[in-house]
Length: 177
Image (cartoon, rainbow, N blue to C red):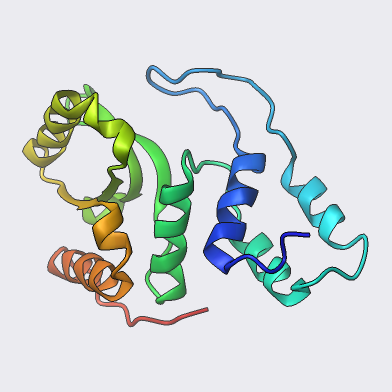
């Protein structure tokens, strides 16, 4: 029934249902089962002939178990559909001495590039976010901050991430799926 939604929104819905609550530094709800496993989502899509079936199938290929917010999901879809490598999601990052730096929304650990989505809920934890991002930067990470304003300009978002990755040694070509 959701097959007519834009692709990125479909993926965000799928990510929400498939989210796993894994162990990690300070993570809540560890072990809580997802609302639906990826296999269940696939089975549901293949039960019938739904409107937007091709888009539903494409969305299923992009659904991940580690996205924590709809905006993280839509940002990731923008990057992947533009042909950038898929970032790792919500990974705990430690410095060379083993101290916890923070959890990155989206990361390219090989290049030490992180992409952080800052929504309205970040207003209340603004100071904590600044300190967390400074720990990343002190460890040599380049952190790109995404807001609703940047998300509305996908070409700028893709250009910023592409530039950051290239500065850090990525020599790939944008290859949309």
